[in-house]
Image 1 (tube, rainbow, N blue to C red):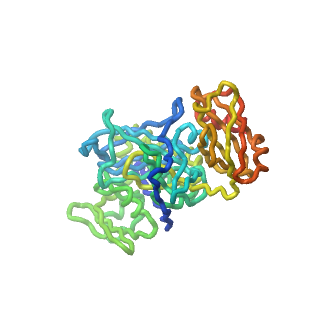
Image 2: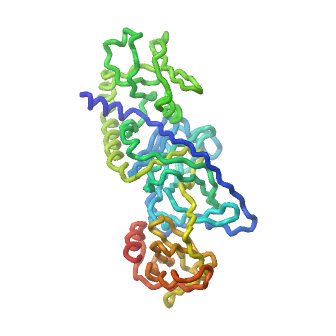
Image 3: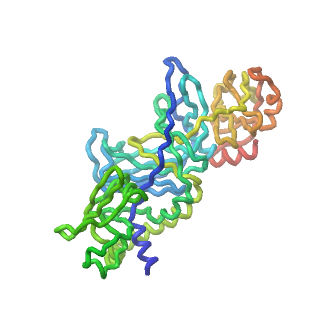
Length: 433
């Protein structure tokens, strides 16, 4: 019976995730006449975006198959005229983790800092958009969306960037540590859909309230929905929480405070009887929530680290580090293609699987070409019909002995392969390298 009630309670509780800020800043400058990265140009096949529906009025949470979560506060959406939206909002969400997904997305992976072009080593990217009745929706002023991205890269510290989709420029936002998935595993049970009023699973001292003595209290339900920021603050270990007094209307005053602030919330005890009543009244909804939780737990292991951020606008975002490529060998590169291939129509990519990054180069010649001779590398050219030409890691051997800045011609050959999905890129990459 206890396990059953725990499942009921888990399906009604929202979770607030916090990460520690890292004191790091980047110098960023822009040259007026610099060569900007291209805007997003995805490959011509289904990119695998996922569609979800959330409430525009109540707090809501999206659970993705990878283990990522997206938390929305109450009244989070406005239309293009700034008018508050009521009802259901459609959310389009897509994550990019593998090199195949990054290549297929067409998202530029170059970043200019202090006038120097750098290459990104991705810790996970995502795009998010919203629409209401077919028209774009935006995040309401003063609101934010909490994105907890399940990253496949377990290096803790990454920088967070937002893409200007008109220019292709990345705007540095902050630097944060990710949290190991195993550290959050015990709290996965707390992530679920919202009931009326936020519910907290807490064992609080009720000795001063004899009327509660014979009640089997599972948690405490606030009389209103709380923001993800408030939920996270109340649940963190440095916040002290107690039942301070009983209010005239029969509710109780929950007091939460730390060294900097103190707040009170009106709450009622959430009992086994109430949980049973809710389960009988909302059996289908709770079953769906339980299934969602099981699926979430089954898939969360796919990510190694959870990277959390608050965003105030929809768009394309990236957790990244700049690849310094300390062992890089710079060359003046020229590229040779099979007969019949027009270089002007080729999208050229250098792939370094061990470093999890992909670099775009000019398909004819490029004086900024460089690669790490100690790493495995693959050069692929993508044609307009998604056929690919390539040069394997062995093809780099003749370049590995070159001196820095030398001229070198890289020869790509036909593969007979055609890309139909990001998975194809990963499959063929392992075959061709």
